[in-house]
Image (tube, rainbow, N blue to C red; front, side, top):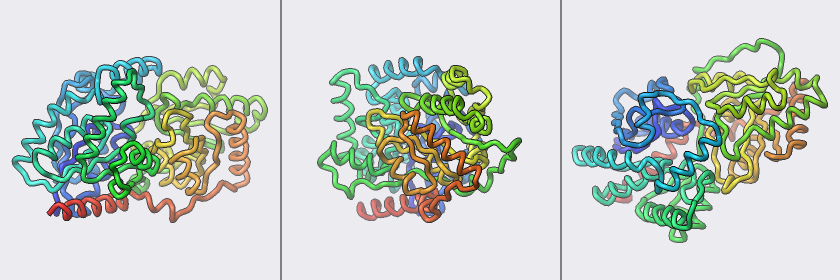
Length: 426
């Protein structure tokens, strides 16, 4: 058995997609001869909590919680927070990015460093595994690697330098982020990323990296989640088209709802037989757009659901919708929800630009592709989907392709890489 110190700020009972990847790695580590100890955040104010997720973790896994002075910790007494408006979120985000480099979790990493030093002094660990964002956790990993001479693996869920939702407000901010990332990449023994576009971006920005330094471990789905989630019986014969997740920046329902409203004007007989289900923590913008385009009868908001409840909604839908608009480095986005869509084996309306996500959905097979901001194109896709639904001709995905994204299989791939790392340092 090998022992790994896992450093992950976002971890259950926090909810949302940011916790799923590391949760599933930790779940399946013991089955692959790795004993994890998780160093994570303490009580936090956050947009979603799902305590049920903790039941997936082996009772023998140690979870060490550290309370910092970051905003999430200060808001912990408020529990689950409401999503702010998109305008408010952007303002808060820009302020955070201006004053905090690399991010506003630096105070947590300082407290976590103290606890990590105790752990590494008292116990033997074969490896340190850090997942980000927040990228300040990577800095923590590099300090520990240098002090304790332990191999360091870093896991990118998103880009750091050039992150699609970041705004470098001065040249200094851009320089500082790139310099910090350079130091982390120099220190890391192995780099894991979620898709090929992120890997290509890293190789382009940091010429000292070799292709073998970076391993792609994509997001995935967990079959037991789909076994546990029940099928929700329909109340009518309407086609259910579902979106899971939140909207922000250039991931917006605006173009889709405009297209649906246009279809409603032209073919009300079609739209009267479609329900649009939205699952996830949402701002008021979705409701405002629904009212603006007179779609209140079609749009059904379910708010944030537990992970199993969300999977049940996916399983019980006829078609699933994914949207990413045009933005900086949007081609590198690797949405976790897509791979759960794969696990549901449902047809997908994919409104995407060129990039990693589009590459995946093309291989999936059961996909209706559309330009993310072309209203006419989306409307035509909706008409085609409904026609296929009526005729019983909705496409079937490629089963061999789907199997590659099982969480247990992906963790097995990861642990093999980690074992090579340990053996190479002996």
